[in-house]
Each structure stands twice: as C-alpha cells, then as structure tokens.
Image (cartoon, rainbow, N blue to C red; front, top):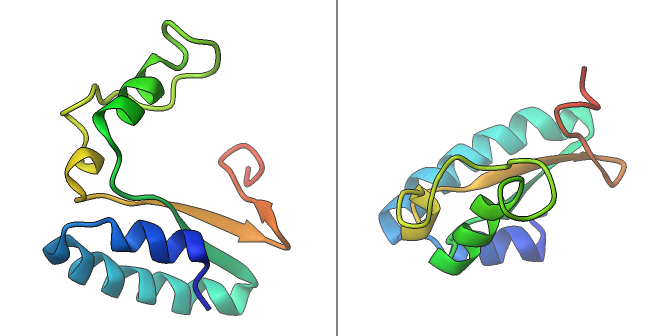
Length: 99
C-alpha cells in the first residue's frame, strides 16, 4: 500500500510523466516488497523556492550538498521527476548505510 506522501508526490506530477513514473514505481515496488523494503516517493514537483533552498544547502547554508541543480534547471521544477526513498523496518536506507 502506498503512503500518503507517495500519493501526494505522484499527484503533483505532470500527467504524462505520472503515467510513466507510476508504471516504473509499480515495477520497483514489485521487486523490493518481497525483500521487505518499502519504496516511497519522497519528492515530486518542487517549487523554485524549494529548489533554491536545496541548492543553497552545503553552499551558503549548513549541511552537505544535495543537488547540483539550480532553480529552473531541475526536472522537479516542472513535475517531471521523482526521488525515491527505500525503507526497511521504518529505517531509511541511504547510501552510507547500504555499504
């Protein structure tokens, strides 16, 4: 069952992108669910202000750099991209933990 966050992020997408990304997500879910991994869409459409805040992170704001895309140059700004998060037992499986 998809989470509220996943449903909302999918709903924010461009309709043509949604059709393709929803099919992709269904395939990923079918592969990961038997492994006990929950797939969640953690980001969809992103405002230019939100993209600017992410771009500032690690540059003019504290934190690590999380994107190379300036506002207007991210597919997220047009509802054409998603970010997936993988969770096992409620714990986010980020890159550092999976190595």
